[in-house]
Length: 249
Image 1 (cartoon, rainbow, N blue to C red):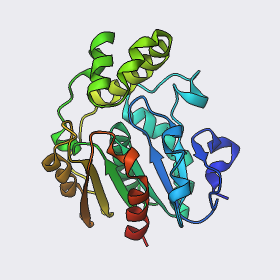
Image 2: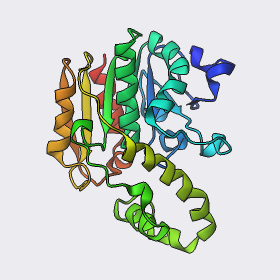
Image 3: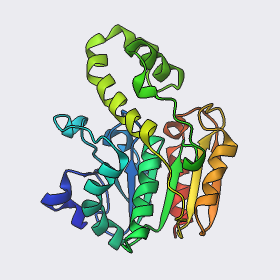
Image 4: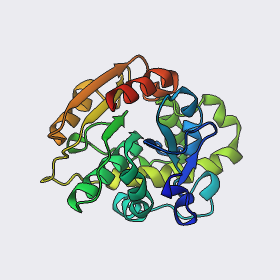
């Protein structure tokens, strides 16, 4: 079993039924407001990788825990749980906010001389050196909900459930603060394979800005464009899993 399932690290990872439980892992970081459950169907499409979804504080099983105020703080807390998984061999996957966190995890590992992931997959996210924060976390509740509807993050029917919004919006707002306050630091290029995924109709992640990720590694770079919007990955899980597994063989 992965060391990450030991008591000290178990709160960070959700392994799913039918996972091999050993060998290489695909460690998945969710989008703003998302949780480990976003990746609940991924293991059923995996042939060789064990899917480990990251449990972030402020949602799902960790709803009572305070969210982190910066991505650096999140990485500081996450690394002790992640390093044993990296030592076994793993691929890092992150969507949107999760892509920024995954990138910073990989960067920190390299800077500190710790075991690197086999590859980094960034999905639905502009390359950080061209990122232009919108200060989404400062939106009014009404504007924030409309923003979520516009990017297909929630259905318009969510407006009919004010109690659900009361639970959801603080998490989204806290996560978007991480993104809005994030600042790219020059000077370190990764030396691992990097793959960017984006939706052809994702207005927030233009293809040319997703292509910019290739400038951040000396390793190989690939860009895959999928039909769909910001949440394209939900409709293409089999293809994404197949692509990642073939890429890291």
